[in-house]
Image (tube, rainbow, N blue to C red; front, side, top):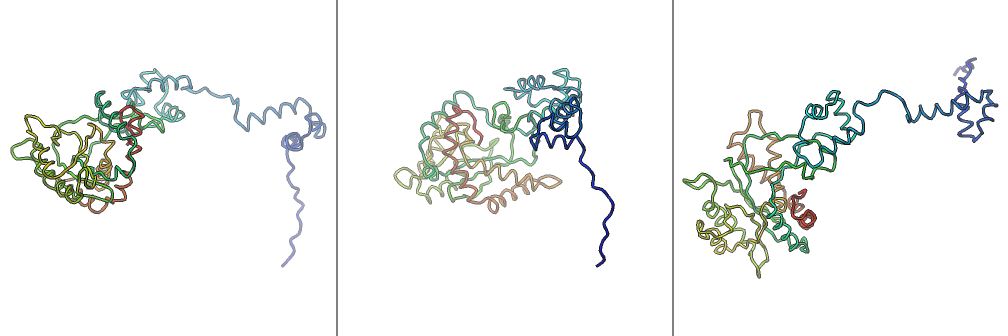
Length: 363
């Protein structure tokens, strides 16, 4: 192998400014000594030390002032605080309200500096003050119950499925503000008619999924239909299999306080549903109204609806197609491990209801 001859190229010398800084900062020399060594005037040496710090760190950098300064961002953040109707405003509306002379892109970047982004809000039931007290009392009564107690529960509920999936609004909020009251979109019953399903879950247990049919000559699902199709049907079978009741297996049933369930005996229903519970051995405990956040089966309905959204055909769902898909997801995709995970969170849910004085929780 031939020997490569050396070239006459000279290595590039370090600039005086960099060598001066190295002597002062790394070697610990004084400014005057380093300036004499490199033959630099004292005024130049002082200027170099000031300039380099400012350029490297970016501090005290002069430039065009921001169109939206921190004081204006403080006003916008205070304007958002506690007002859901303001958090759903568009960028154009915010600019108009505060009379800002900037583009929507500039405002978006300014809000980003404060951590505000557009998010889909949580949807929760509106809880009146009286029911908040009931929830608070229920939570205090059960605050010492362990996971083993809640594992003996059979959690039942119905859910409505629509072939048309509606889009939700988006709001301005920061990370960690998802469960703030002014970031929640409360829902109200609209009386829409659609296909409904009933099911029950327990620890290591999943019932059949029942598609509910309307009672003849009635507008919708009523107490007679619930008594015939559910209480004397699948729920009666579960109660027999679990030997439900106090002094027996200690298994209990959780039903919400929907009028359809007929948990209150009135002149109109003549105790129809309560009579069926006694005859079929269904031990249903008292449960506070408007408390879907305490019932772990709600996560199952959310799971199914998310899967339906992912499976939705381009042409949209037909009712028979959707019912078939609901059964398939319940039977084949919803595992007992998923159910067990949510049932074991009930002690934490109870604590959170107490902390929020009966208000809506993050569940």
